[in-house]
Length: 210
Length: 257
Image 1 (cartoon, rainbow over the protein chains, first blue to last red):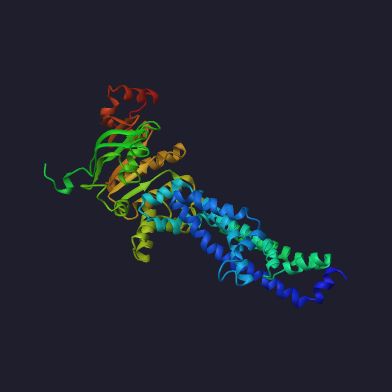
Image 2: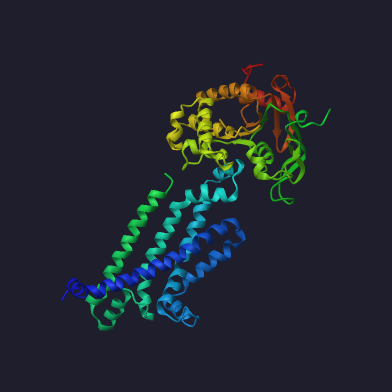
């Protein structure tokens, strides 16, 4: 039986796991965007926070994912359900590219242009929302893209703590020494990563200032 | 001399010094005393690093002085609400200042918009300004990248004029243009200035431009004001630096005097 026949036979389960996977990635990336982009903006306004914030996000990134899942297990409420825990861990991993790209994007806006805006009497808020964010949107979306693609891959490991997703097939296949089952998890996950990469790449291009 | 606002200079520097990073840093401007009269075009002339751009940015408080004070419209800049101060001062820099993601109309209408003018009034004003600076109102819907360098600079001037500020600061506005376009814009500046009579502080390192446009020329060197003279006085000046300038620019300087 080849992998396609296996997937076709188990299409309901494949769909269900794909949906679970999407949910893990979607919610965690959304949360990370909600926290990461404002943090990135914050460290352009308060340069003193630059090192601790970027350093913190960097340290999180260096923790092996299985270990991070393990560390978070004792956390109250979060640790009570595997999917919450997986979402939190994935969101933490997604922070670094989001903070870094938001920061780099805004820093990359031509200083002379920002000064022109300031010189004309724009307030800091007006500058941020009308000039700096629109002009760095391409770079910020590039951060979202990197974060999403990383999440799709990392979310397969969430199955190890019982959070579901396409990693279920991968771990099951590994245990059964069955490549078909591994591929039934890996192929949809890889496809999802590619689709996210291409669509966000397209968005990034569209939103980049000329 | 009475003290009503109209008889006082529009801008006054009193013992102004500016150091990078507050008190510890290098001094970019040393004990500057200077008055800009209402309606005149004062040119700050000097080489790179002489302190002319620093002087300009002190006026709209993009920089704050380390000591001394700058008085704009009879009030020290430190007393002004900085946003109000900047909105009554037009600011033109080399072409980098236009926002690439705004149309010409939105660029020009920027200050009126943040001043909450109604949309139709902004629209009318933009048309009027485009005509004033010699541009076809048709280009209002274009983006800066679709314009030539000269057109962009005209848009920059129109944008600075948008809310009809009494004071204009211009930092080498024509520096990046080719010679012919620059000459064209310089002449239009003169015509515009005849009609509008704004108080203009104009930064340049080009002596010809200074002689052509300036009511008076403030010559700066290494953070110090060397002399302030009219064009005529400048041409017959014996100041060593003024002489060096005249020699560098050759003998054919009989532009308008």
